[in-house]
Length: 219
Image (cartoon, rainbow, N blue to C red; front, side, top):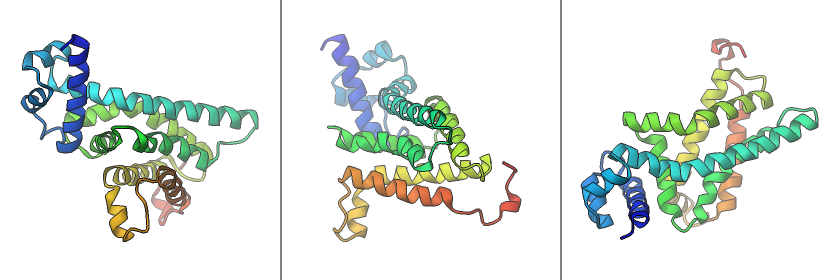
């Protein structure tokens, strides 16, 4: 196997196993066995399990976040030209559409589960990985949400964004449950329907008034 093939094979196998079993449940031994290489290959290409997992996420998360930021750039540029604040629905689309579109990717199921793992995994290394991969995205989108909804404080918008990410993680990780809940009436493989309804749901959540605004910090 050529060096480049080995590098890619390790990434593909690690991605599949990590999406299925999580960080703790995926050992280097299992990864190397399924990839058909020895442990030295991991050390040569990545140096450690943590760096392998970091590269797995960077390969998938990087392009998605880049697309998010590019969409947000266009939204903000248009709003600035027109002398207005960006619209909430536009911002939600920029955040939600890129990862959900992966449902159409050839290996979409594994990638979607991988994304959800990144969001819900509690291990310290994954938390650090989340910060590393999403710090700029979170900062940019929180600023955009505050421009679109200046009536809410930064803390309230952080709560709302937190719940939005949770809804996305569930939709990405467990789409089959929709078919069960709807008794077959809803098609979880319908990408555009998923995007539209997630945006509708999150838009309502972002616009919902705060039950106890006196406890929120000033905007």
